Image 1 (cartoon, rainbow, N blue to C red):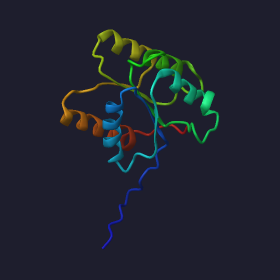
Image 2: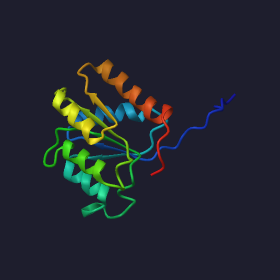
Image 3: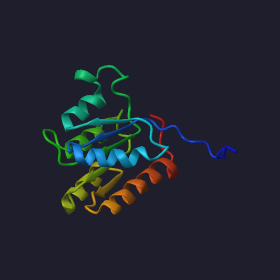
Image 4: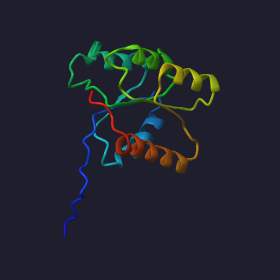
Length: 154
């Protein structure tokens, strides 16, 4: 017998992860892929690449290669243009500011936290060192943003 859920599965827009660490990205991606709510995951490895992706410049001029993300998971400590500047640019741009941005970083510096909220970040998560806590935090992130909240059409 096949079980059919009475609740429709939401189709989520792509998730953009801006993360320079291969290890952190692979761990995050592994947990995200376990959720049936997550569609495609796009990755940028630095702030300049993320801005090119979002503005569809450079190698990202084709909307197929740079779909508008439904959410951005952003590390702060990136080579080149750092995550703080990427966040600031996103939240200052009329066409991008509605995209939810979740900072996912090792920085627990109160100044970084304050600055990110001043720039308009939607959530700030400090990467836990403990594997079980990391798994829990990512599952909570997915549940909250893709099951509980209603995101705008972008």
